[in-house]
Amino acid sequence: MTMNMVIEWLKFRVEPSKREEFVRKDALVWTATLAHYPGFLGKEVWLDPHNLESTVLIIHWKTREQWKAIPQDILERTEAKMQQAMGDVYEMVESREYQILHFGIMNNE
Image (cartoon, rainbow, N blue to C red; front, side):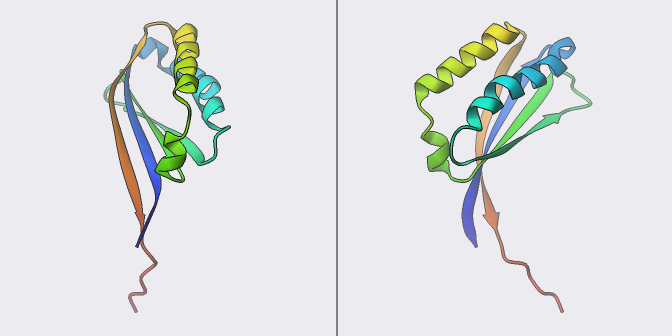
């Protein structure tokens, strides 16, 4: 068993009429910035069909150290760009961190 990949889990409340725009702008602003840093493996967007205000972003990182090595000023500038692009139609309501455990494939013969 090894622990490698880390998941950054972010839950946002977004005005339902702005959800699609939020997802597009997030890709243009945040994902484009994060893609320049080592360790960034990709991002998923989870949309809750039963709660149109809820948007969850799942960011995959190779290691926690690589994720946390992004300078704070870059994070602040990127969020300022996102705020400028979207205004006050979204709010982060929860954030979490998960580690993914990788197990070898088991042969059940």
